[in-house]
Image (cartoon, rainbow, N blue to C red; front, side, top):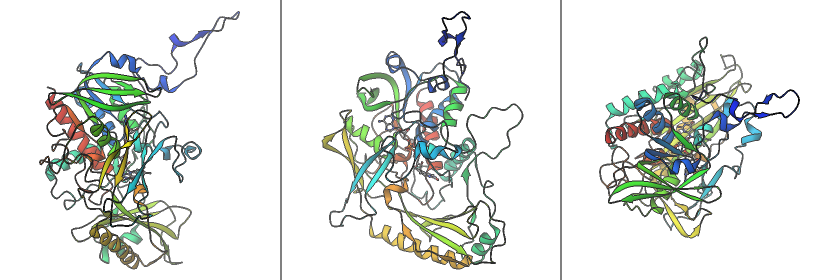
Length: 498
Ligand SMILES: Cc1cc2nc3c(=O)[nH]c(=O)nc-3n(C[C@H](O)[C@H](O)[C@H](O)COP(=O)(O)OP(=O)(O)OC[C@H]3O[C@@H](n4cnc5c(N)ncnc54)[C@H](O)[C@@H]3O)c2cc1C
């Protein structure tokens, strides 16, 4: 990525050799040179217009939109990221990501934090489907780890949202453009699509993914390889205007005065505290950390931390009968959206060299219920002095019924495609990684944490972005919707700070 005024090798930082031929030695390129990290001591001296916490789908989108709309207008933007600079892009862009990253069970504790789950309904016994949620701390958030599947929510999913379809469509268009969402990356699997469409699944189509398949034109500089992560949003923002960004720095508390956000307490990894002054704070620190910071700041709201939701996730492998596979083996993927009667979506993915086998997965709607929530455990305080969070979650009868229907639906789809299925299994909820809803937007402060644009009810200058703001789960993978809503929040902030 090109950062203005920051050459890759900095002559000022070079050191004389001290030998006869007194050449300067270039310092090794480091992440500091690639990215202009700002010392937190310097950030403490600045009066910010906006501070964004987190650089995942929510934080990356807000930063990108502010930079794109504001350009170099003199407003001061600061970004606080608890994680480290681990990957320069999405892990799939790196041939050697596995040893470094290793998304194996259990997740690498260097980067992942676990949030234990206890039943919210005490009458339900503990379930292996409900063990713990996992939260990633890294520059780029989960976008450096995600699978890039980027469908829009359907109109049925959006029912009851405080945003009109027309407006959602506009923000989906913007998010799809910056994320390079397209349906042409995977090969069209005619042999599956035709059978699905003719046998009860007319909505089946190619899977939308956030991958830049546009050829590189002469002289063009690409900030990242083709699979999208928010690192490319940070790069785009940096090419448009300056902003300050501190990594390995954790936001722990928001300060408010007379119903207005005025600052943020952050701590470095030596647990030294700093106080940042700002007109606006955007918390985009994930479904678990955003309500945790709010609750730790004494900010009360009937819905803060509540309505925790995600998707149920069923998986199996399908086998195509020998001689019934008209295509050359190759990457192909099918997406079957949810409908008014079907509360789940399905995806089929085939990869070489498994030409006669492909994956089928299904994601189901999980109800948004007040009792499913994130709470602080005041008996257990972390090394930053913040009470740890605990998730209280139980599936409702409707959720369990949707899971049964998902199994049935996968079997019907298999019949339609003329394939046989291995046994279907359910993924534990915490490993689905589609957590949402703990600071949902809405008009009623008793059922939503923030107004329709992400401003915490009753506190000006305090905003949420990211997956926590999503009102209800729908069945579509959440990243694109998270980006669209967060871009919309940035537009609202721009209006408020005029
Ligand atoms: C393996 C995997 C596959 C996935 N596949 C898909 C997919 O195909 N399609 C899809 O739509 N979704 C997918 N997702 C889900 C998607 O990545 C998330 O929904 C999305 O990233 C959530 O965005 P967010 O900004 O709310 O949170 P995150 O992306 O988690 O970002 C939170 C950010 O806040 C930072 N942070 C946390 N606490 C603090 C603090 N106290 N102070 C400062 N910074 C802090 C974190 O380091 C991080 O940068 C996948 C996720 C995973 C892990």
